[in-house]
Amino acid sequence: MALQTPSMAEVAELTGSIENLVPLTAGQYTTGSLILMVSYGAHFAFILYFLMVSQQLAPRYRLVPIMSALVMASAGLSLMREFSLWEASYAFDGAMYAPMADGNTFTNAFRYGNWTITVPILLTQLPIAFALARPELHKRSLRMIIPGVLMIWTGLYGQFGETGDWSRLNIWGVISTVFFVWLIVEVRGVITAGIANSPAEIAAWPKNIWWYFLATWGLYPIAYALPQLGFTGDIVVGRQLLFSIADISTKLVFGIILSRYVLRRSALEGYAPAAEALDTTGAASKIASKRGD
Ligand code: RET
Image 1 (tube, protein in one colour):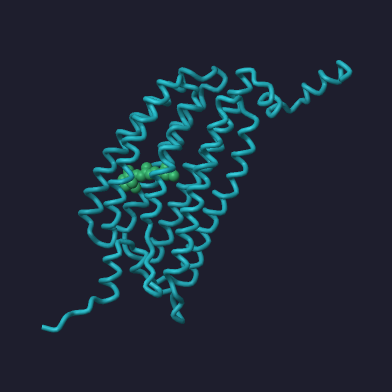
Image 2: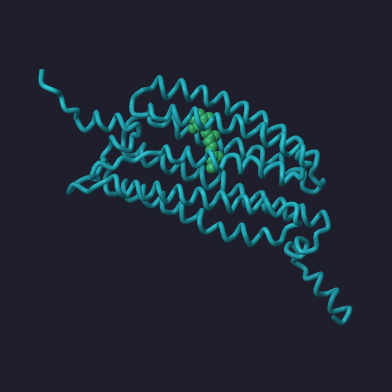
């Protein structure tokens, strides 16, 4: 019996990423490049922002934007890698951008690897911003990190089923969702502690952060399930867009929100540089000139 060489489609299916199955139009290919490029560019740019704002904060809160800067660097590098991989994996054949150029395959698995670093940092930012006492902070962080990491690793294993092994995709997706629900319960506990512990003027912030957390973290399972709607260029590009919106919301905008919260909090707790950063009346300089300084 002659040995059958597998077809390109069969090989692509084995790579476990729908990106390797679908030829893209020039518009889709360029849109995908653009989405990935804007994502890593935004993450890198905001390293500077977070390092600068940390200087306005009371010392106990400075770690919050510094942790955002770490997340920006880590996610930026990972997204830059996804961008290079995207560029290397497609070749223009005269009509379409064909996948698996020069044997290069695309994968979203690096994202999941990166979340293993960023998710524990993002979760630990919350109890630090809410000024929970250290023993409580350590306990609560660990209780969020454990389901968070298990959620990611079970999802990482399952996502290799996205090229057609729906039982792998869905069974591991459900297992991952169980860890997500456990994580949500733990985050709610931290939010409740944050509401109790916030100065009255900003007690609404933890409540709003809670809804923001649910809405933005909830985008990832949608991106995970999306390949089941079909192997098309629009799904490939739409999913990169969804991942990017989720990345910018859960890391970058989340970091800005937490930085503003701790700035308000620093000022309310009497830290003068934070009060000055928020002052629009020039009160400090008026007092100074009245004194003749
Ligand atoms: C997976 C698998 C399918 C089920 C669920 C998932 C949830 C993923 C989440 C990821 C959050 C990532 C963040 C990254 C920031 O850098 C793993 C897709 C529920 C919630 C916030």
